[in-house]
Image (cartoon, rainbow, N blue to C red; front, side, top):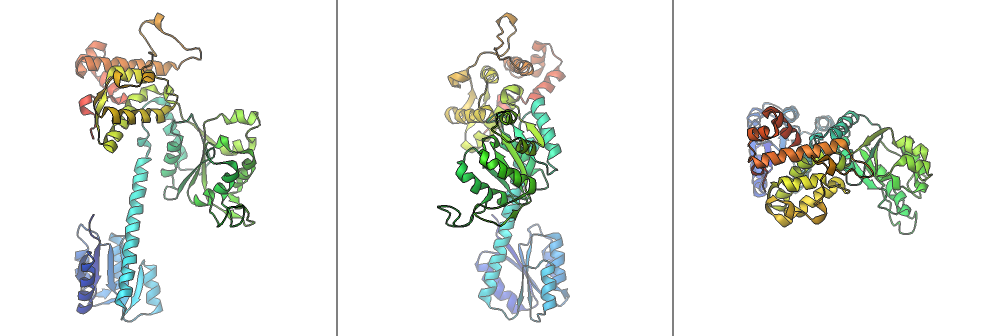
Length: 467
């Protein structure tokens, strides 16, 4: 990591020298100038200035005006203004223009060094926060939600449309389908992306503690409340509150949550003071809330308050064509994080995984790939490497008489996709991934086959990303 860079701009040679020596001993990259024009030249380099210590009155101009120039090309730069002729007006003007601090000469060197350390720490924290926001934005961009199937693409198109609004969203889906990932994608692609994303699992916290978790409490509100506590609603102010497993919310809290959603106001436990918040709410559930309403387990008015924009995340068995793409995605992730070198999954093993029911959905698939990455370590995964339960029966067969349709039915499009994937992979494996020969075996145009390979995310073993 590069040393932080400090500019000293002052026409007093002795002051420049003294500051240079002290800051240089602390390992900082220090540059000095005695005129504005000289300082402007120094600021044109590739390495940005982290902190500028600038005299107010310089031979060729005004230090505050130079600060405005510096911040125009480097907004994140911190500036400390020095002056031997301080006035209230100049201090106010410096602060309004963005100065970190205003110091009057003569100054105590230790106090100035303390101020410099604070300015550099502030600058470093700003950089870290910006980097974190950038990483989060990248992590939760829509193209990071893996899948080319029509089912998941429909979800992403809906997510993209609702992200800019402040409407409440209810995400439906089985456990492990990625409901929180969808919620985070909405948040980090919305105008609230710089605000907090605060999740809470309503089913994982006992009912007697959940009210305090949601709304906070004051000291002495109940046994064990030894200090005031801020709740998740207040922590999410300016951002998004994600209420996971909302269907498990205790009936006694449903009325209080309804009021908080309607008015964006609440009282912490034990308090008579009303707290107002600006929060967007996204809820998620793996149960059928309409059935819960009919059964009297969930308030109808709360359901309609939550269900402004419903989004249903399909289970993995309904988007089987995405499995090859997801496998490639997770192998890449775990190759890097576990320092392994899996090169892919052969056609027989892939066909078995595509045909598996995946009751645990994407979370189960991710866990399996992590296990295979650790235990297999190198090379290509074959059928013998899979745990027994994943060696499933075929979903589709060219022998119609041998095809078994389960009593509860099957997804036609998923079965067709799975069979098409298996056919293409077998043809490619048989021809050593020669697309011309594979197309000939399948009696397809080469361009048609290439387009299918691209859409399905199929990758030759020797092109799989390694650790």
